[in-house]
Image 1 (cartoon, helix red, strand yellow):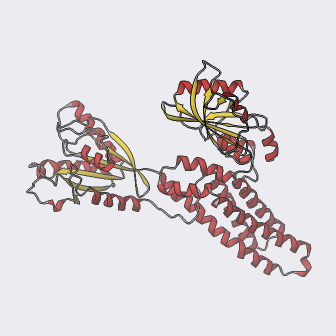
Image 2: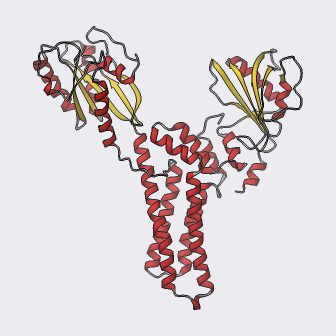
Image 3: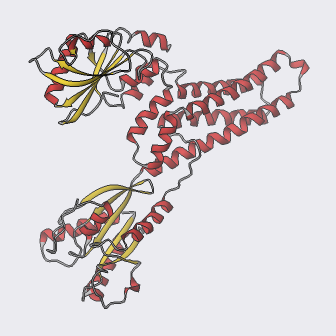
Length: 464
């Protein structure tokens, strides 16, 4: 589909949407984009109650917004961005309201009366693409950037947002077009050329591209792997300090700390990052022999969670006089449930005097004072990093769509190499080159369908 055709279907409509969450908050920002966005100033007065004339682009106005409904007023900050120097490439007005959802509802009704309509999911960004402000790969990276849940994927999404992937595939396409030109010239002047030398030139171009295609696909697999949470489970007897350790790991007071045995009857799970990799840490019910039916159910569930963990921290109270008897029995129970997961035996309460041999533990800490917790984090970090096959290069791809298209490009390039080796006719090789070029153009957005745009931008939230 031509961008001009798609652009023309939008250029008569002005859209509006909050671009921040509509919840009671300090500020809620509303964006208006389209040919009539400047009409927003019909609802704006200066601080003296006068109409604002000769509106200057890129200037922030401290002004008064007057709703057409209920005569709601608000002191707002208003900025006008004149096309094409805006996010969407159209005239854009952004208004920062005080964060009252009732006020925003009234303001939106006023905008509808001006002839504006609600923006659809991702429509601001889609207009940016259609108006040549960003490429399709850069537009996709914005959503990936927002949704990234690891430091590494965040970094690579940012690089893609800034055009690294687009430039890479522009070079890919240029190299493949060069290959086509070589073959087409040979077809026109076949009597004057040596086909073996022509094919050698092609392989010198295609083989490095094939290698880089493999590297990019591996980078995608690695980034997807990094984005999958590592499951870390804390287990041990009741009152051994599991909740306190969870709080230290999270540096918060998410868990309830109590000296009463059996306080944690259900699971508490939180997410945090270690070396840029998301980790879900779960504090379980205390594991011990119990005749209490409810507590026994909690213990059974804890062992089930352990069976699905990547890392299990077994916490021991090094001041417990029954350590050698009860914890040996609990240890066997937990290790049997761990099902091959990495188990770390942690001695806790090092801030108190103890008389037992601490060499049986992998590490000794105090979850109360925090002593040794940093060393524990380093130990966890080494396990987490080792559990992820992180092989990313200076440029990585973060989009599933890109990976699928690139896999087709790889197959086409492999066919080129195979057909050259079999001395197939040049027009068959050109067919495979065209297939590669077509899929690269789908990655960058030079070629697209309306369905592809819908799939991509429907993943965005309204307001982006």
